[in-house]
Length: 283
Image (cartoon, rainbow, N blue to C red; front, side, top):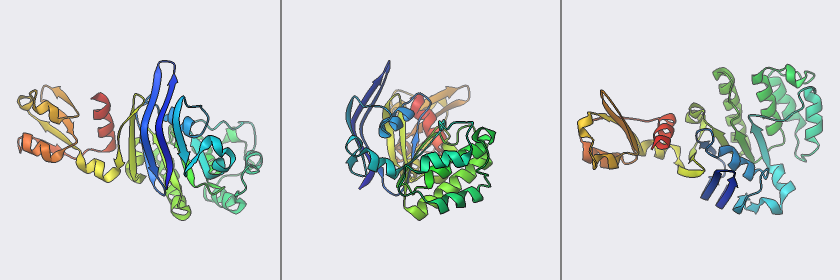
């Protein structure tokens, strides 16, 4: 069973249209959801969370349509976003008290354990915390009811690298113990380089690439060479390319075919996720 299944999903918001024919998020893994700002990441997540109503299509969470089984499905989901919506003037213990009652699986021992691990004082007022501390508290709130699906929308935006690493380590530890699934939306591709198993690229409201991370990276290569090698035929082997006074660089998704076309006259470099995002959106 997949954690999330999306079929023929469509949502129009002004001039923007989200259209996802088919998307399956595998149970028990971290799936990265990547795209530049304005591509449809947050809209997709809001539709999955039932914060927006779809125009058409279906969204299933662990095999159940969300609209049929709202409360039971919400019990299964932990959610961390870039803007949590907590009342800023309230103490952490009172935020916890107000939210925990809605979860029958709330684990007070686990909550206290994470507070101690992150060195957070629950008598502190939320707005008095640093950005990093606020995000740690939001993660604690998301994990303390043993969710089976953790949905994250730009959770580490504006955090320094040390806090991001700590955040990701706790997330990895938790899902290994709980056998949980993570759907992680971000434009910070270095986070996903470290932790994700599967990738979904979205651009302009459409899924342009998806699959397991290792296969995607192995199947792609950055090619650098002399501009004289570019013509109408060789350009077809590239997702997109860039020309400058020194030569050209481009991305291919068929390394074997590119070797047959360019041979040893070019340099082949391994791309990272940021490279893939840049070349695909430029193309």
